[in-house]
Image 1: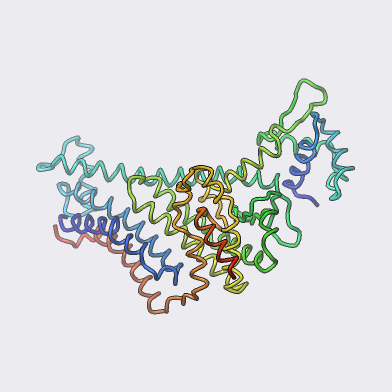
Image 2: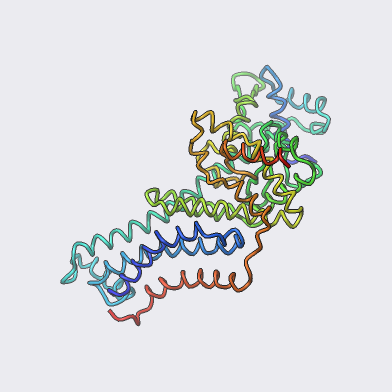
Length: 122
Length: 318
């Protein structure tokens, strides 16, 4: 059984991979056929709509209310979200250390060079 | 009350300047990072307490012989709207300073926690959408990105460890276990709470170099503590090697050069945390003995108790 988070991810994957805006039914069909995990097998359209509403509330999805049924598209590309994430991880964003602890924090070029030499020497 | 405020001011000064500098330079914290962390927390707590306490007890001098009497008489005077005979402007300034400083520190702590929680949630959402769970490792997720990074994202109920594809590509199985054990230690020991508290302190006192120094010292100590947990799972050599590999492949090294041509950006002024962690593992630094640990804990406890005693003890003569 897929968790809500995994469902959201599958739905976003469909939207990110699609060039057009999709209806909830399109997304359900895509999930049922497409991925190997079989997340969408027994999904009802209402479930997909619930997931879409959650994603819309978090500003990941844009809904076109003029069309019937509503059309959904990703509000930002996967690459842009990845860039935002890595920006935070690599410490360019304020407050990041408070939120997450990287295995190795910031490394100066000089330190990286020194370590590279030591590793090569061993 | 004169003795009280003079003693508290002296303590506040000692904890604001010589004591943290000595501790930051000392070698023993690397041998007992947990103890050192306790001592840093005691210094921060007592430093703040004695700073506010000194201002408060100086300001309350005209109101009463001790803190309790002083506060009681102060509230009476506030209602009456007039000051007791012999009170000086400097004392009123000190009193206002104590109240403002106290509010400032508490508000800053609260806003730091709220802001961190908000960005943690946002980050959690992004990670959920952009990474895939690693089936063979619980609470570990794989991020499809070439930069070699590993980090722990604390959660209210469950924390997650995030590994990038770039990291998995450069580490072998044992080294990967070292990284994961290190990150799980951060989550299990709730290190982010300590880091947040020191970050808040640094944020509320930006003109106070010691707060910055303490924040940096604590950040390294927390890494050493997590390293010590990882050493239980893998050999010291494996752990040292994985730190060296990840650090030498670190994307910061290129980021920093990109930011400033001479490579001397703020990123570079980190105090070589990775090298210090590696040196500690390679040189087989022995953990501090039990007596020395006891002394450290006793010192920390005494540090917190002294200003509390000075402030609350009504027996101290005026």
